[in-house]
Length: 375
Image (tube, rainbow, N blue to C red):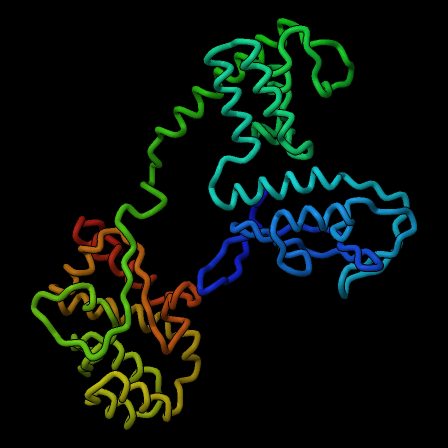
């Protein structure tokens, strides 16, 4: 199960999502380490291997599921110990099944749990013993360690699922309070009612519109690629949203050729440099002037607020540019900035603060247009 353990690796410039879990690697002694699992089916167990090669690593004990009494073990820079009465929850087959499920989850494909619930739906739609047998086989195909969580019900666990696939008179893996009695008709009817109620709840949930609106944008993401030089236009496209677009900005009585000019001017404590930046012909020249001048104290902590103020001023002072920003609706804005991984998205490697602040200012403009007061 992936949970919150998200990671990635980069292959040929492509970001491959992944996750990780703890395992023991047997390399002489036993080493507690992380097993990284990636969406393309490669697994890092002290070296990238395919799923087939990972299975061999399990069979030969390199990825250890058998922990012998008295064997030496360690966690890197954490602790060292010997196993005493070890109890492993895994076999090679079980761990391999969980890893296969994880690869499916990373790719958004149905895993063994999803396949089981699909088989259950098919059985409930046509309650033949043949369909029940298919559902039972799908249930048993879920890794044993994950069966309790198949329904996502922390109170009932997988008990209704066990009862349904066993049927009246059938045997279940284990009863919540012990015992080995066969499934009664009453228990079976309760399980059927459970699944019918569950289907109704899922249908309502899937059709429910969030009170606060959609979680993800309705509009397609847009990318503001680096382009230089830019020319001013009465009818600009989204290039006008870039900070180096020639749209003069008045800040405290001083007019700068662009947001970028104003940003670099405000970054320095030297008055002469600020004046030179205000008349610099290009952003690159403004940046070079600022780089050679002393920085304002606390600039790194204040720069995001300064940029927010400058963007607000730009779109307040240039209504036709505000219309361009509003025209992006609720799209995610990815801003390229070769000089800064702080301001730019830069292929997913940067923090994209310019894009995020454009989205913030856009939301403020929408609020103003809708008459929603922010005071």
